[in-house]
Image (cartoon, rainbow, N blue to C red; front, side, top):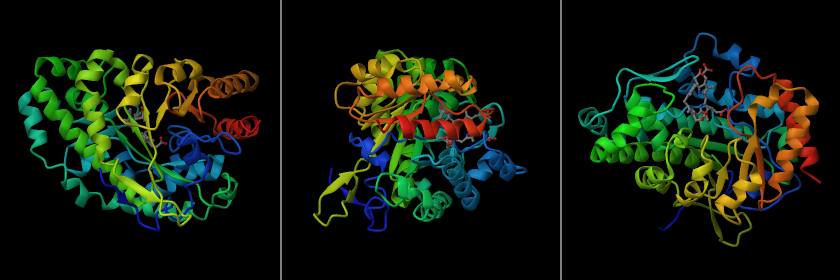
Length: 385
Ligand code: CP3
């Protein structure tokens, strides 16, 4: 595929984030120390987040550029993490093209109906996913506001010689979105999606292809607007057998990523050399799928807390940078227990060519934020040796 070059003002092209700890690790290089960020770092564990969100519904907050940007920046300022993760949600692109979805506190995304048969899927796929491009102005604006701030974050000078902290864009993988769509809301086993996959493979394929294009466009918008890396969340792929994943899901994830694979940046050294934008792939309970998740076309694999990083390294194959994987439950354990667990994750991570420290899933809402700051300090100190 012939590449599309990101603008010279993009933080990667401008040389602001292209050699940051995070971006270096995502391309397999070890920097001065191990970079760290936390899934769900922007959100309910922070009192400043809860204050700002009073009276605003979740998806309205995501579509308010000033608010989304401020929430994205809060954990960067507070914890000194090596990346911001864009404050949004995997269902935002669905809302933007007119699908009726709300996020219920304590529950998750809820639709007015389930899309679990051919007729319902046909209704959904009648919407042209390209409509997202006109509708995503609030996303592009929120990203632009965020990187303008990140480009002048004082603590950014510490991120391994580069001037700015990178922003990570994200999207939901087609299966995880389809798991909510088919059910009409959250579920434990994602039965409706797994049934549709086999009961009506044609409708399933249509649903997955449509979702892939929509979510791929959402990711592309964030990168073009200034994100320096991207993470595809297939949170619920762990509900699938390897055979079902490979046959009915992986092709759609690859299709979603095809919407960003052509994006490249020119290195700031004037050589005219180009590099791709790094992409991470993460799911929960995906120990059996790690190899297949690498193969959909990503640079980095995110590992949940069930599989130690040295075992994960064997499963994804040599040369693949890993991200993860402290059990979030340990954030509430006494500090000596937590400290030992952090050091253990760092030690196992040395097996991979590069390691980005993270949790094995999102930050629990009741987490004491001062503990997260302390973990960042420990990772930076211990990861340097
Ligand atoms: O800090 C970050 O990681 C960035 C923001 C982010 C949110 N959602 C904000 C959010 C990201 C990356 C997501 C992705 C997302 N959303 C995923 C994939 C990641 C994962 O956790 O596996 C999934 C499965 C969703 C769907 C979703 N949205 C769920 C399951 C929930 C939780 C519902 C609840 O209240 O327990 C949401 C809501 C949501 N998304 C919140 C936040 C901060 C909580 C809403 C609130 O604060 O009121």
